[in-house]
Amino acid sequence: MKNKQHTFTVHSARHGKAGVEQYSKLANGGKKPDLVLMDIKMPVMNGIEATRMITDNDPAANIYLFTAYAGTEVERNALAAGAKGTLSKDTDWTKIAEKIVNILESA
Image (cartoon, rainbow, N blue to C red):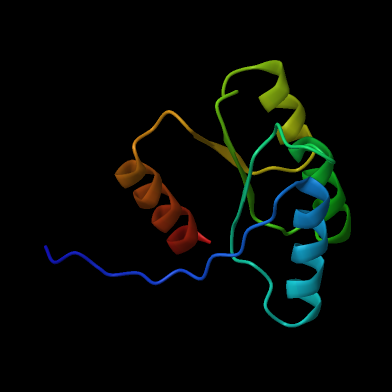
C-alpha cells in the first residue's frame, strides 16, 4: 500500500480570544478551517470558552481538543461546549498526524 501525502495549511493563535477572532475571519472570508485543534489551558480566554464561542456561531465547526487533560472533568466540559473529540498531547506526532488525516478524511 502506498502512503498518501497530505498538505495542511496551518493557522495559529496565541490565546483563545485570538483563536475565536481568527476562526471568524477565516470563515467569513470563505476559508473556514476544516479542523481546529484547541488547547484548553490558555491565557486571555481558555479553550472551553473559545470552543463555546466558535460553536455558538458555527455549530458545524470541527473542533478537537489538543490537551493533556484527556479523561478529566475539564475535558468533559470542553466536549459539552461543542468539541467533537480529543487528541492527547502525550501521543507521538506521527500518531497525531495520522489521527488528523483520519478526522479530515471522515468529515
